[in-house]
Image 1 (cartoon, rainbow, N blue to C red):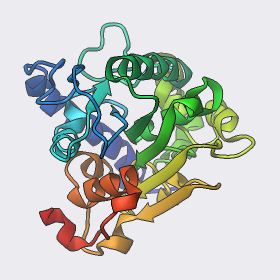
Image 2: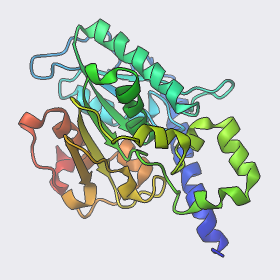
Image 3: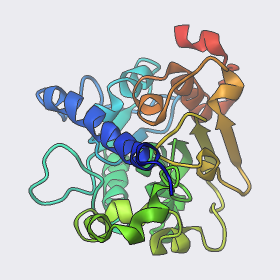
Length: 287
């Protein structure tokens, strides 16, 4: 039997991720979410240098503001039209989202992409998502016609093949209360457990669809989506990147890689504009 500390550590990590999301949200929501500190500007017109708007897709327990307080300004300052949506809301649960059924969340993403394309006049968008937000768009691409409207998907610590939470999910059958919490009260968590019916459907027949470029950014210190290599995709037009291969000194874990990690941000910019990519190193934190 595993020691209690080892059993509870992954669950604590998940709850810590939620706490990281909630704290900024309470202050950031005071900002105009339609302006979002400079993004979600529907009068923004993509430039010749950056012809596609970027849609940011937050992770579980997050929202359209808190998840992107670092990356959205980073991309906006580089000349991109940047947008972000809220999805997967549950009734009576404020501030933290991406908890509803993931297939329904993908329908929300579909509607939002259509809204952004209509506002900007662009033919395609690029998607950048953290955690669930890096995996959920694949349902949109594969089953909801998204491949015709998306040029690239960049997943930051995405739950592409689910998570074991460092082995914790294998114990769920022994804790019926927790299993009920996942399946009934927070469907998105159940959908992200390795081997779930949702993930089986999503990954059956291949991880990718033609016409879309895929980039996955992972950290070996991820304690939420485990094992970290389960984040990687197989297929053509896929680039799987371990941050520590670019900068061994990068110690970011699951939450930090999406919130603050400028090594990851630099590689996102490279993925969005591969023709002008600059090699990412530890010095990229200064860029």
